[in-house]
Each structure stands twice: as C-alpha cells, then as structure tokens.
Image (tube, rainbow, N blue to C red; front, side, top):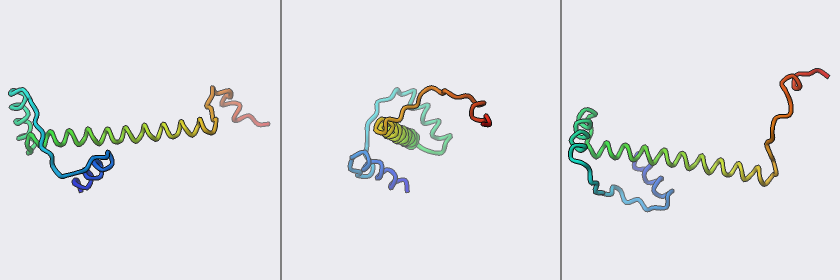
Length: 99
C-alpha cells in the first residue's frame, strides 16, 4: 500500500515513479553517529529515519496544498457570486426577539 501511495503522489505531482531513488547527503560525522544510535533504539536504520521524515513532510505539504486550493476555490466562488461577509449588524437579542 505504501508503494501505491508513493506512486499516486508522484503521478499527482507530475513526476514519473520508478521505485526507489538513491540520493547522497553530506552530514556531519557526529550527527550521523547520533542518528544511528537513535535508529537502533527505534529498531530501524538511518535510511528508514530519513525516509519516514521525508514521507511525513511530503504528506503534510500535500495536505496544506489541498487546503489552500480549497480555500482559493471558495474565495473565487464568493467573488463570482458577489457574496461579501461584512460586519455583524445584529445582536443575539435581535435574533430572539418576539415580534
């Protein structure tokens, strides 16, 4: 299922998905040692930690982008319908007044 999600995200962003891609990072040696200790404690690898973090980052970005597009679509609808939300001109008592 995870591969399907990656494939879907890659195609959605307009990139072909070829499986795994190798990248090279330059990190401080002390940082790498500390991260490897953390990886052992979490029963994973340094690659697993990096992959997990990047997947979460991409998912957050996709969610944020979707919300932004939805908000822009709603604002566009308001503009198109000339619907303006103005200051409140009524009080709670006005709503419950008996006439």
